[in-house]
Length: 335
Image 1 (cartoon, rainbow, N blue to C red):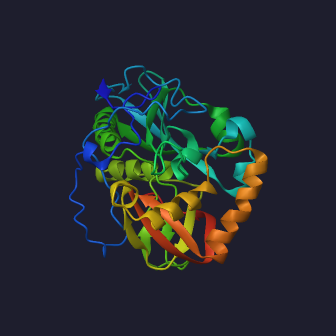
Image 2 (image 1 turned 45 degrees about the vertical axis):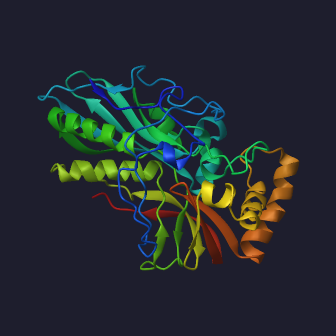
Image 3 (image 1 turned 45 degrees about the horizontal axis):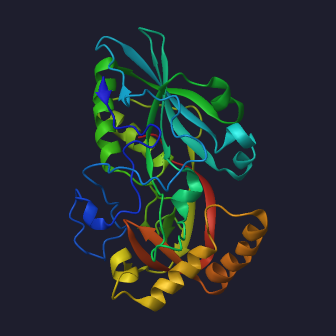
């Protein structure tokens, strides 16, 4: 059994801790001219902050000890591309009509006949990953922006087929599966937080990308690339489209982190403006407050052409420009 460090009922997760709590795996430097800004990885998963709570339990049927079964070397494992609308279990195809899809990978052991599903998603749901909480006792916005791998037995055929995709794309050996599982462990332990937005200069194909997202489809594609690197051939008869959520802006400006902006000696006017900005995007609001917030959002993003991005536990200012925000459903070929 390979211990993946999968999060079960919040185990292993943290939030709201200062940057000094972590050892970063890569030397980020401060080279602000590197675009896209590299996603920062960590060398461990700290403990969770009890303030962050999921509306729906993360990975409720995952293996209790957070492991992926070890397959026999002689086994042949079928690999499936899985896709369904976000929150299909609650809203059916509603979000699918807006091309907001969730991606995963399925496996079937031909030796045992057992099926498995592997996915990577938000620990505390999408709203918490995209926007912070404003807590009156804290000066800085408080983030619950965490994501992790989930591996569990079974493939819910109806869930994936009814409004989405369940397609066999490859076959791998048991040895290749076990190597992939070791890689998943490392990837899951070092990539600990979710990033909703892809930020780029404009919608053209060869434009400058300022920031890359880090979400469920990115995990799926990292896994596909790992399998391809092992010599696995992946084929699909369907168009391999994936959901991407874009922000469009001019060159971003680095602002600082919680300490330099919100701590003693921080920039009070900037701190106040960031808190004011995120007040319009609170993760949990009543319908009335949400409608009022939409007016504020329009004012800040479109009229004032301004957006504050939280990335790598640091803040950036985005000078927004048309078309501002766009959800796309683009084809990304298998590697």
